[in-house]
Amino acid sequence: MIQRFLFFLFFIWTGTVLQAQRMALKSDTLVFETVKTDSIEASYSYYYPSQAKAKRQDVLVVHISKADAKKWMAYFRKVATAQGMLLFGNHNVDAKEHFVAQSEKYNLAIRDFSSRYALSTRSIYFVGIKQSCGFVQQMSYSLRRLAGVLLVNPQELLPQKTTLKNEMLRHVVLSSDNNYYSYGAQFAASNMKLKIPPQFYWYPATDSIVPLTYMLFSIDQMSRKLPEQNLSPTDSLVMQKRLGHLEAYIKQLKTDKRYLEALEALQLMQDTYKPYMSRSYLKERIKTFKRSGALKTALNQYFKAQSKAQLLQEDYSYYFDEDMYRYNFENLGWWNYQMSELLKFEQGEDLYLKRMGVLLRGELLLRIDQQIPIVENRRPLDDKLLDLLLMLKTVVYPDSYQAYLRIISMSSQREDFGTALFYTEELLKNGFKDYQQMYTIPKTTFLKLSPEFNDIVRSYFGKSRY
Image (cartoon, rainbow, N blue to C red):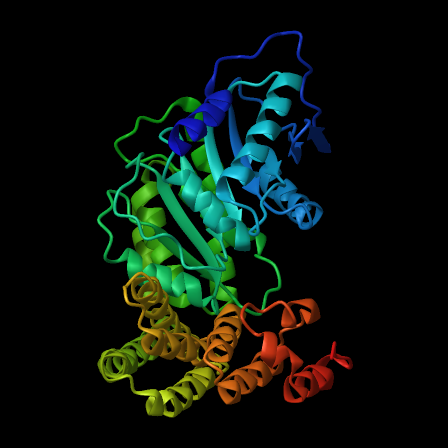
């Protein structure tokens, strides 16, 4: 049923030229719109760069929350201008709403846009940012005619699918170096059987927003045609433009001291852009770069980090399985020490040791999040093992607030108030700021009335309810 609904809303984008009486798109202006029905309200925006002169447009659909719309649409306006694409912003993503409810709002926004403006589309690409990545991923697995998906800094582990409706769909993930979920997704993707494996790219964690050079390159990778597809003269012009993006990307990688990625980008240039550059020039350029001292140092650092990562992966895999089998709560202290050691790598200067730390943490987080639903679905429920997994999750990823809240609820239900109070303190110590939710945690009636609980809440919020 959901797939039929998604096909219907997507069909609106893929029709022929719309009726002539509809308005022309406003050029070089970021336009925000709101549409209402009796039951729902949806908001969207669009930007049509004057450079987009093709009769049939490539459309970049950015899925974001209403709160982040202005910031991200201003950013993607630059992207759309550089790419010569029509930009459409879906501002109806809300993690608290069901997927179908969000889809209905998106459908309403598309219908309103299509009824107002004359447009003929060629290819459509989806972009998800942080919390909207889950919504975009669900959409992408259900639609056949989508051309590509870009996920920027996903904030949750992506659904692990083995088949796609569209097997030729290109998936690209662009994340900061410290995004645990993307490393976990990359680890999982290596075990997925896809015709076109997902591509992962990283930018410096020190940047508060994605550098434009990284974004343009990622969109080029998401939207580029496959070698077996024929290029039209228009596509050839696009390839020339993308070659310029790639040159800027390589230059930025060298500036950021990401020499291995720079080498990969040069090799991509050689494989993809042969008709537009001298082959001898490309070979000589790559050969010169391979002889550079900077690349040799980077390779030494990379292999050193890989060797260390392999040893730690073996340790973590062994102790994780052992602890789950033996319900070994006593080993949480060992895990806490291991995570503190990983944090030293993550905060260090060596790029590859830093990535190793984040990768190992991401892999652990993936294993925990895969096991939790398995344990939850067993009957009778193994409370003890679920407790251990949730506690380990708070050690591996201290910002996983839902894990703390569930431990507090489960411990309070068993009248284990000592554990509940300990994790209440840990939750607030790690930055939880929702005062109202402290008093709406399920099954904590007696805990909330206790002086100890209210003392902890008061020490962090300056007030308490009881």
